[in-house]
Amino acid sequence: MYFVTFALQLVKQRVSAPSRSRLVQRKGLQMLLRPKTRRPARDQLVPDADSLFALRARNFATTIARDPQRFNLTAEDAAWITQRVKEYRNALAKATRPSTRTRPAVKEKNTARAEAERVVRAFRKVIAADDRISAGDKIILHIKERSTKPKRRKCPKNPPVLIFEGSTTSGLHKLRYCEDLGTGSKQKPVGAERVEIAVEFVRVGEKTPKFPESLTGRPWILRSFSSSPFEVDCPDPGSVGITEAVQAVYWGRWADAVGEVSAWSRSCKGMMVAPQVVAHFHKTDEGDETLRKAA
Image (tube, rainbow, N blue to C red; front, side, top):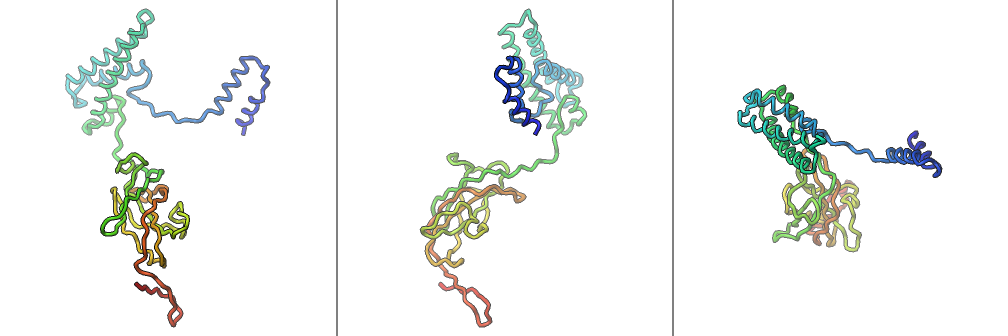
């Protein structure tokens, strides 16, 4: 509440205030209204600052050169790292010295840094993946120990795109899914293990529902599929008391290995389906309702 009041006070200030005061007010209001963004994690071994990277890279090169076998490297590897880091440090000194700082010198520094980064990152990856090197030795080189426990990938929130492709000679309905319309990819997004398919029957003239639970209050889930395209054995409309031909409408949603699901996809209209068996309810002499099916 305090910040909102302070922002309103800044807005209500008179235009005749001094220019320095208006600048302070404008910057203060921008700080209040600026959206909060999460800064990316910093790389300990390859920081953004040139001078800090030069320091970390020299420590990386000298530590390895002192005892290459400690990190399961050869003397040639250590010499290669030392040479690339030395070239970068010399180019950095030339580019930061006022008497030698020119555009070609800065360009040379940037090129040398890119090469030094490439070498340092490559050997860091090799050392980080080597289980024979202790965690303490890796910390000396500013290399974080990899976690042995894999992280579970969360189920995507965006729904899949479901497309009806027709029917087979055996009467099965053929559908396919994709992550986004127009991609044509059969791959599931990261975190999705399968796609769950739900169906509903819509009578002629009725509006197609947006969600599978709109008609009955709960979705009629048929089964799950892990590959695309796939074939669905459409249920018989007569088994739920429908006596006329209806249209089958499908929906799909992503699901992961622990049961987390995404939102339902848009309605996917299928074929017209005629009932094969009509269900009738009738009362017995005892007054109980039983289900009788007649072809």
